[in-house]
Image (cartoon, rainbow, N blue to C red; front, side):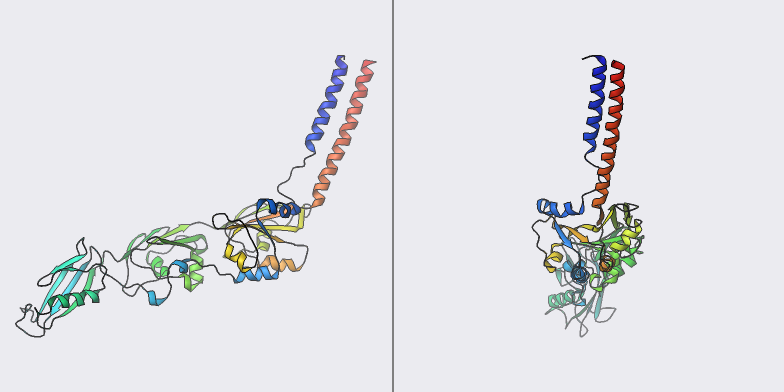
Length: 383
């Protein structure tokens, strides 16, 4: 084969290789039909959104702080004595000439009685008394019991002067982090946060973490404000952490402005999310394929009678599908509210893929014509 023949063969190979590589059209994501088909293999749940789904999601009220911490007044905090506390103890006797008779009459005052590291106090004629974990009233009864048969019908008053142990810790994104004493009658979470100057950021962007022993709960501050049951009583030793973590959602696919968006209101619907992204792209969008990707609480799916077989970290991979070709679906999209980290995806219409294929065919046809012209030119050179 001569040099011109080699050149001719090289041109044909280059064009054919280019065409074969272009037969796979690029896409931003799966087609609507592929999402449902692949769900059986990938073990995620596809749920078609209708009136019953929207109603079920709106009625479901997931438990938050109240699941692990009681919110009733019955369980309000009762102040107890702890290590490091300082007590004021006053002992009265019914008649003079008793153990505690003196310049102050038939009484004795001990204004600074410290609770030692063993949780005990020491008083004259009473000896060492274990008071850790007891209320002031219980300490009074304990002292009276220790003086029976020694003092004349003793009566005792005990108050906490310095309550080092009966404190909570507030830290994170509050104006005045630190240790705060608890009132005897107890205090609710929002009041405790307010005592620390409140959150530095809007409530819809702020989370509250409450740690009590080996229990922990997390809730959006805005939810604590809106739902009284979430505004639980805090207790001795509680650690409260306020963190700024704006809620976000993602809009992808056939929209005009795909991006990550933050919640600019307490609640964002699917319709508002699409509008924020510039709306559907009329030239590309498949109106039947508007999807919301979410790791869903299995209890929600069970309440909706939707079977599932796989959980990831206690959540079920779920895809909610909204058919926007039906006018009523706009009401569904308006009532379907997004959650933090949700992803909204609008798939391409089938016609878009057909259009891409037609363009490739046109490219192929044009390329073949160019090959023919080039090879004819090479043949003429050979002649």
